[in-house]
Image (cartoon, rainbow over all chains, first blue to last red; front, side):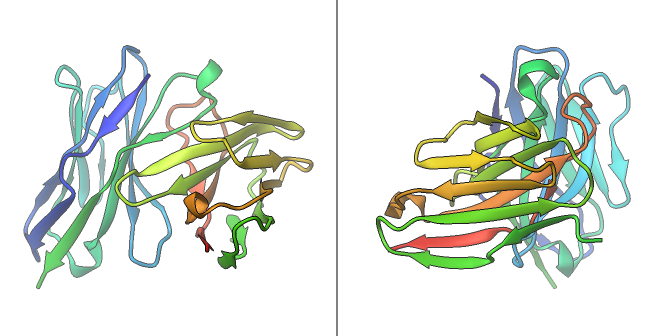
Length: 117
Length: 115
C-alpha cells in the first residue's frame, strides 16, 4: 500500500525567506501523481501544486515549487519569499493510477508552517 | 461559484444519536469522496463514489454509511454516533479519477463533536 510521510510536525520561517516542507512517499507503482494542499486556520483545503511521476521538470506555481527527486521518493514543497498569509497546515498527497485507485488521494500527516514577521 | 458545499458546518451529537452530512457539488464531477481529519493523522478516506448510484469503502468505513442517489449529492450517515467519530469531515470531488493531474476540490468541512 502507498504511504506518505511528512516528518516535520511544525516549521518556522521569517517573513520574506524561503522554506522547504518535506514529503517522502512509498509506492511500487511507476506512475503516480503528487499534490500539495494548504489548510489555513479557517479550515478549507486549497490545492497548491501538482507533480506527475513522469514529468521531467519540477512543477512551479508562482511562489510554490516542488523539488521532486524520484529516486529518493521525495516531493518537497518550496515556498519562496514567505508571507504572513502562508501560515497554515500543509499536506502532501499521492494518487495512484486509474483503475482501482479511482482518483483517491492518500495524505501525509501534515506540517504546520508559522511565518514570523 | 459554489463548488463543493457541505452542511452543516458544526454539529454536536450525543453518543448513540444519528445524523446525516450532506455534500453537494455543482461542477458535474463524477467522483466524490468523504474524508475525516484527525490531529496527527492527516486525512483518511471513509467512503467514495465513482458515479451516481455507486459507492465503495475507503480506509476507515466502519460506523458510516453513504448514498449517492443524485450525481451532485453525496451523503454521509452516522447511524449510532460514538465519541471516536469526533472529527472534522471533508467532502471532495474530482472531474476524473483516471487523470493524474485532476485535483480534488474540497468543501469547507463539518466539525462534529460526539459527547
